[in-house]
Length: 245
Image (cartoon, rainbow, N blue to C red; front, side, top):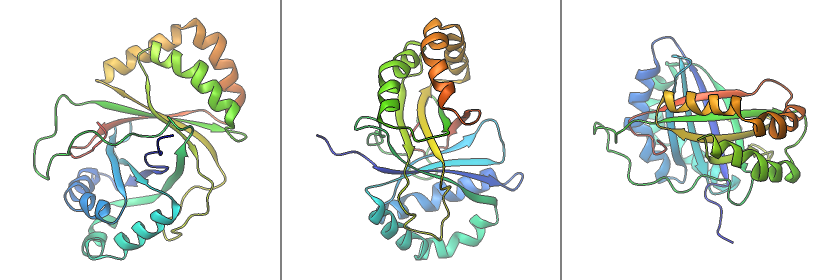
């Protein structure tokens, strides 16, 4: 069996001070991508939240939990973060909204990001895209039976409606190996990601889901039994240097 790419993934949502998102993105894209990857953390993607002008969202992948500890210790204890942490932290009102995730199946993880990201200051590849992260919060674990239901019933309907998942992940309950950076523990979350060409494409997908008999009758009743609260959908515009786009 092929080894999983990025068996550990962080989904990080930062609430920023008003008007500071582009300040952080400029700093992040210029200074923080390659130094993290040099010590073993993969910056999978960084995004503007289209529904909140003060939210910055990014994804970071690791080979395993011990590698995560080593990479974060190296980066946050190293010269690049030391030089720029005050400027970065000055943009942030809250940086503790972090979910620790793992692929929900052998085929559910992110693949290697395609191609090389542009160098700082270079134009981003076109055309632009839109990613979504849909978060389902469960009142119990998303067990193998649910993963099978997702693969056999949910995923085909999503694909039929034009929203084939790029990846689907669930809560990783391992001990936080770098406690200096908090994560949201004791939550059961299932997250799936999809790519759309633009907002019109996403709207068309959601409309097709609403009109889908299979979604209403075969999928939604089972999902709604699992949910502990209203699902969350993030509409994410990749930054100029995001690998996922």
